[in-house]
Length: 261
Image 1 (cartoon, rainbow, N blue to C red):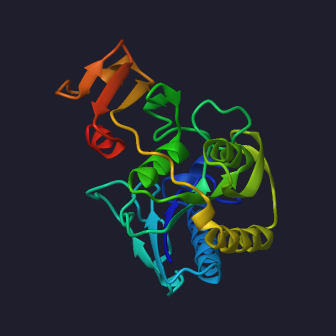
Image 2: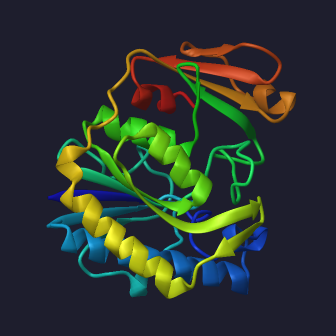
């Protein structure tokens, strides 16, 4: 079985603060280590669940968040920017997709560090008229390739978002939000143990979970935070400005629509 693992940082257990997700600080380094350890737990669980080939995508910000020398040796890792496509390494050859360290979409009350793509630039995103976050986008990309999304780890609201999107998905709650920057936290070893067990279970039931159906055509509609941000978007074929802050990106499928953004 070939498993693809996409990762983010905001949903990792213990990650709550601005200084943990960007910049250069001791807290940022601690967050990187926490992420690396959760990735290793997911790799260990995937192996237990039957994976023979594992690719992991470092998906947060610069794409250079894993602590390279501490990564599990049984997987390969996509790191750095820029990249030719979203979710580097995901293809039709994969049998299952895991999403580790996820956060809920922008505007989710009680979610830890909720946002969609950029809390600085993006206010809302819709895919073919449906409110969508990064989990939904990742699952749609996987669905385009015919790959089921079988595991999501992250805050409680992120896991609820995933469960509403993909029937039967395995979820691992790493923290329960009190506000955007506060949460009830589980001990770090408990979180890693749950991720490892969840990954093993997800691998075992991957064949029972259907990929999201690929949609055609696709419209991704982005409401930016400021009119000036929409002003900067060049209007070319496939893009339409709908109002002061909203741009529609239209194409034949989700991959092509994302290339317009």
